[in-house]
Image 1 (cartoon, rainbow, N blue to C red):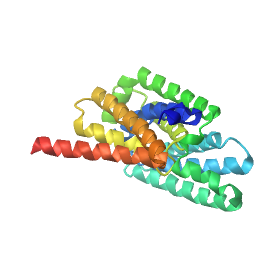
Image 2 (cartoon, rainbow, N blue to C red):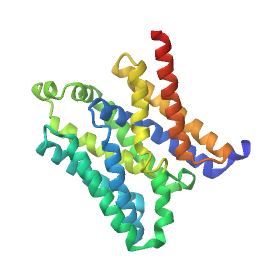
Image 3 (cartoon, helix red, strand yellow):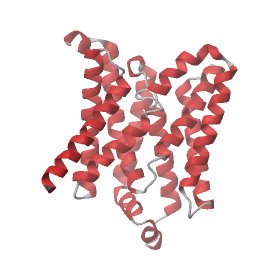
Image 4 (cartoon, rainbow, N blue to C red):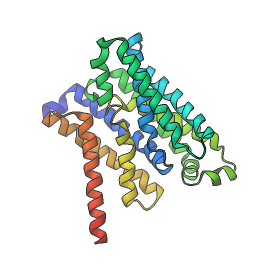
Length: 268
């Protein structure tokens, strides 16, 4: 275990995991409370199409995935306005488009398929200095934005109509949330993978809904649960030679099940 902790690749994995373990649940909490939890799946699938294009063109895959995620977030926001009564339809449309485009790009050059698999299922042990700089920058942007706009985000999350009536620029904040979500997802896909990234966004929020009594408590709980799962999952994966992304997700589910049983016990 000491040899593992002393390894440079594992230290980079821990740093990247701890950083994304703060930002992903924060954004995820806002999405869950706004009933947009599936947006994570949608943007992650579009990001994979960008990653595939990055491998084809020789451009840094995470950067291309980020551009694709940002464009998808903007399209989702546009479609949400067009389908006000069926806002979730916009997420399904973009997800379908992302999967379709990714499948086409996968068939253009089969030589990079194994590399893309690391973005599908996560490959946190392969994080390099560039990846850490990108993740740290995104973490700083998200934390600053949430810290400066916490009151506005709280009002928008729980009552968008009241926020609009009070003079809050709802369109601007919706766009900001979409962009922050795209940033977080693009940074997360190499850590837990596009197929698992929604778990990091939604499961900590699901845990907080069981025990939190206020929005402030929810923010603290999602971060604590996420960090415990990320650090514990990485240690378990390293010690037992398991998949890191899957270990993190399964530990998140274990925490959720424990909280559910604990809550049922209290009611009983």
